[in-house]
Amino acid sequence: MAVDIDVAVEAGDWAGEDALAAIASQCVDAAIARLGFGDAASELSVLFTDNKAMQALNAQWRGKDKPTNVLSFPAFDLAPGDPPGPMLGDIVIAYETVRDEAELEAKPFDDHLRHLIVHGFLHVLGYDHENDAEAEEMEAAERAILADIGVPDPYSEAD
Image (cartoon, rainbow, N blue to C red):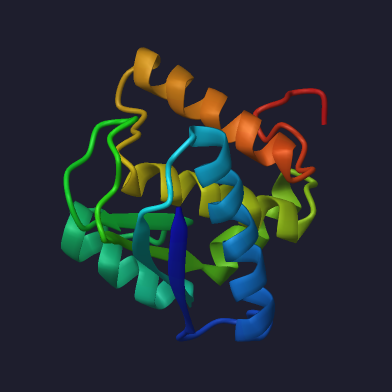
């Protein structure tokens, strides 16, 4: 599956768009390979922003007036395993929250960023974590995809 990723940096102390596009592409390619999708072409947007913009989006779309690390806006309702269509949707990531979480969890920033891109991408593909069974399925997919690109288990207590 070829995914055309549109990367934009709106705000925050992010690396350049080329570096972020390479990270996003690595994560999406690994997810597509792990999940076994075919050669259908699709599009995805990834917006890198700051906590202020993320708080506004979170309040508007989820009714939570606080920033969060990642938000996903699927173009279509999918269930895990459903083949995606030509438009996947949008992922938005907040710099300060990613930085603060990485520091708090003593994880490399880029590893945490990769985890959040994979997490957001799985949401676009219909995965969720509203109950224990969904969370286990989504976390297992995250662990496998991240392992494929050399990122340690983000849910490990051993770190």
